[in-house]
Image (tube, rainbow, N blue to C red):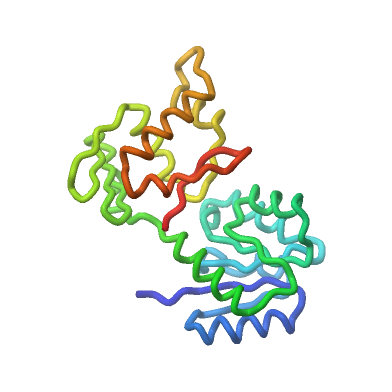
Length: 228
């Protein structure tokens, strides 16, 4: 199994070194960058997690995250924001940019280690046995056969439920609004209520049993799939 690689980006060099030392003590391979500009020159796609300071030079952590989310090679890399700012607006901005967690300074190193482990655990991607098959633990979705199984037992889904699950499985940790789901799944239908999405999500959660908890509601934003 390949070692987990973490990139710490913060303009406080002492803090970078402290985080590097403690993360390496946990068995991670850790690199540091003292600005977003320096980090963006690195092969960011090679890292499993970014610890990203918000307040930095010309390119802020928020701006850097936005840039990474727009690139195919880096769009799914987990990000934990580290910041001295602790307001609701900043937190919302961070999560809206696809942050996986948000830590406010000052923080305890024990808290950071626990949050890092939690985010890495959640960010495990389903294995893709082929372009037509998505697998997460004992849940398998076969695109060609239009078939979903859990523990090798077939789960009966409607066409819309199947398409919603496929959308979420292919885009883990990506929040889709009701409007986006309607546009993708009900694109050819003239009049469909937002409530239709909620009803289908509720039924889907029940049908996929223990994996229903992986479909998370982001209040005010929509739905996403998070791996346990």
